[in-house]
Length: 217
Image (spheres, rainbow, N blue to C red):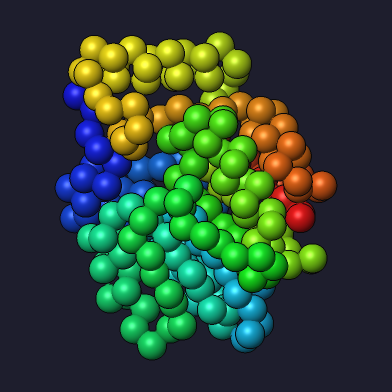
């Protein structure tokens, strides 16, 4: 298995991406609208979308009457262009960058969301990101995470060891993001969020290996 750079992986699969995500991922027909339903709808609200891709969760958000301003971050410019073309006239600010690097500001957002993106990264990376995110949310702000999770600690260890083995064999730059799933268990993800400063973290719903976590700042 040859690993591909993260941005190139998703850009190469742009054609058919939305259909694949909507129809080939277990529970997707439910978890996209469910995730959108948890976000604030009011005008004047600010929402941060981490790994927004082509904006699948935003489709359901806007259909349901959402009027908040969206800030979206993604590594793939092609994905962001597709998102922008979908939502002409909506108040959306987009950044083609790593969300690990982009400053979020302090108390800027009323809510944050991420769908099927964060399962590609290491715990230490996510801990720093979650701490930055907690600082960026308002006093009553919250984070909705819908993502793919490992079914057991053994599976979690295998994903990470296999990722490292492939990177070593292919002599890849350890500081570059490559596409390979390394999901944590739900319990370990909750531990990271709690360590990062979220005082209330709840498992809301589950669809196979995809779950939605709701975390208050």
